[in-house]
Image (cartoon, rainbow over all chains, first blue to last red; front, side):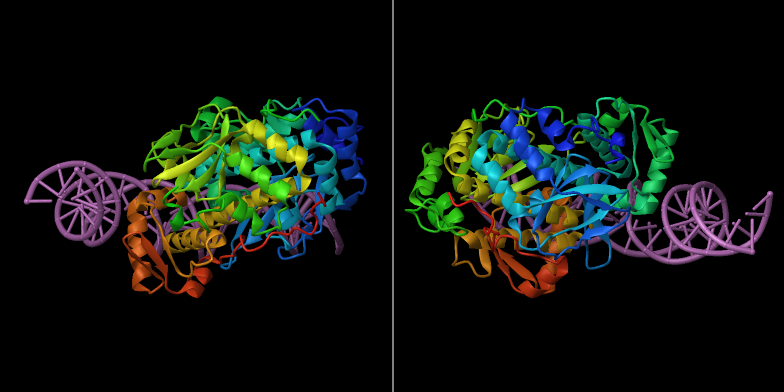
Length: 253
Length: 253
DNA sequence: CGCATAATTGATGGTTATCAAGACCAGTGG
DNA sequence: CCACTGGTCTTGATAACCATCAATTATGCG
């Protein structure tokens, strides 16, 4: 609990709680339900393999600090990065239906995770239909984002895909950290970016410098700055799915 | 209710119920919860636009008969087909979090749908945590399948993508109809297949005939036959995500 | 039979993968 | 202070896959 400052709203508050409180005024019972998922804590170095594809799925994880990514291997050796995880994310919801994990999980930076058992989700379903609805909605939103990613990968060329990914990352970070305007820490290597976008590392490098030349963004060390957000949004037809969730239909309790 | 015979388990039983009963022994209360989603009925011709991207999301739909697809448009005019819907599917879970739909919905064949309100989902969340868990799991499974699709599109070439899609379709149909072995009715045009796989219609045509020449599958009219399923599974590293759902952690009620 | 739509086939070009070599960078130890 | 090292990023050359365009054939339906 020492390097939370980079990414979370406040060191004393749970990222998970602040994430959900962004969309819905949480009641005390709901907050404590969420907090109960963060009792355990485990620390990992950068580039650690935490879960291997094929492992039994027993735990989910709340990310307390650090970045990670879920990925899997193709037969030909190439890799797909399915999702980048940030503080406040719940890792493993996708895998809930499976006995064995479909993806591996690797840290991109030093990381603190809170593992909890699948069956702990029962408490949420049993005790709070309203929180269930929010969880479900956030998951549905992730589904739509995955669809957006599919759209980018299947029909857009290299620079547009990169624009999409960077806008997605910064949009998500802004939910937890209102201070972020146009610069954020982006610790991913180009090979990881490529594997998330169906590109080679070489292609990422080339397109990135092209985009810098065009004044879209720039990178110094870990720090990425979006210079012309309008142009980037335009390039990949970006829609921010994180700003709002429709809570109008939620049950009362 | 006249052409259900093609795709559903039995004309007298709800496709939706039989779908979920495949994974879990449903109690009477759960069955009637599900049936309550199928009260209304609306019929459509083939190639009808039912929802446009941008429309307010008020309804979800249970598919009673027919095929449909969700799609959206890119700026350059090309199209992405997000998902193919079959009888027993619930359409619109992804859109639950949104005020306005991110996708359009079009019928591929003559279709019968049962619309119900978003807020009807409250009943499920409130009355049956166990059914909620199942619904959540099925949704999570769809998430994993979307991930598999991403893998195919981002890293596999044309014939492997087609193999993936055909295996996905037949695997889903087999859940509702045990009689299907290696032949099924596939009413989608090549342009739709292409838009679902990030390919042009031309590319689908070429790869398909190549695959026929190699003895992988064949097509006569609407009827597709998988001739060498092992080879096709091998080609795209296919994993059937529909056969089983992990229900071990579900709450008791 | 004739029309509209879908599927096929051929020719061309663009985007990106792949391979390979070199530059850069940070950390290490002499 | 400087060489050394492992990793990442860059840059160039080549080739493959697929999109696109266009023309022809096939299919289905009134």
